[in-house]
Length: 121
Image (cartoon, rainbow, N blue to C red; front, side, top):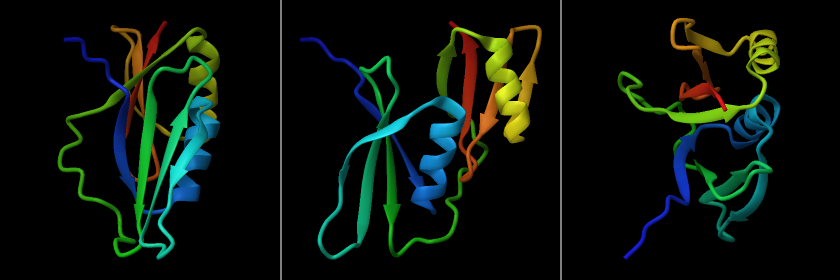
């Protein structure tokens, strides 16, 4: 029996704002979506060009406020081939929330407060 990770879900309060952030910060684009006719929710799946793993963004019509993320002791990590360029882009976007130069990593924060780790890759 073999398992592989296929997606991680983040609930978002503003789907378009979240999609714009993930496109601009990480190059992720929507690849598919689920949306019932009653408009009660939208699930958008985002992926990068490397494929194989998707970020699922869920928007719920009846939950417009930001989500309580507790102490943010969880995160999704992204490897990047050009740390200097990525850091410059994220610094320009103003989304860097924590840096650890000794480890050579940093974190960015999306519009809903989710932390994303950027590692050399």
